[in-house]
Length: 360
Ligand SMILES: [Zn+2]
Ligand SMILES: [Zn+2]
Image (tube, rainbow, N blue to C red):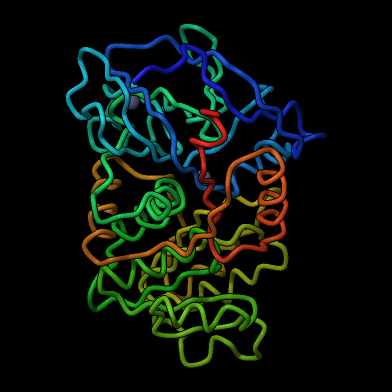
């Protein structure tokens, strides 16, 4: 299957014009021995895309193509590739490199490697080329960060799992989510809806905690055992010190009642935040931790092993991402990202129609 040396993608020129997408050709990094070239067929839209191109997370290398929930077909593989075969349906998430040699990489913690590079916006060490994401025709990725997609899983379900899904799955797995445990998911957005469905699939009693009741019906359809709305008076009543684990996926911490959330945790229960709100963050007082000796932590993406296990769990249990499919083009990207920015999506956008847009 022929394809160009130059890839084509929808790029943004700067934070002031972050909704103006320009269809440009760009140079991928040189094809390496372990690289896989992928023809993209679907890509989810992540809040990271908005934070990045709108400047909320600081300065970036422009022009830039974002998108890091990618599914497509492997076209060619480097001579040393053993994990992926040409023609296979595969995915790429938010991370595209680590050293694979350090203490962290050798313990399935490659997502925490100090040399880790992101799928978009990262500068490749040797060439200075800036990595470009999945709002584009192709992506070139080291095999370690290329994941075979199980047959039972539709591409538009699998794509959003590769960042949002993994972000929810890894902290559940690493903090004991399973039968006999009571787990809370704060914020029912892209990440949160995966947190809920994965926690249920892993066998935990799972509650959603949200500001209002507006998403309660959806949460129940996804299998939630219960729903708490922080706008209700005495919303913690009956739940104090009963949760083993709470995963916080909220994308904003304005007016966030942290001490009330922490009061829900059992002794040495864990609060794990995975969202990255803009701004200065929350103030943590020791007084908020001492009543139950709880732990506060965070989590970043997940390992290759966790990606493969998550995709298999989703295929085995028939977990279906709540996805709104949108044909990729400049106008639709702008419209969808604007809606995502306002939280107007239940629960993930996935761009499709790549063949029509890039092969015409
Ligand atoms: Zn993401
Ligand atoms: Zn490493």
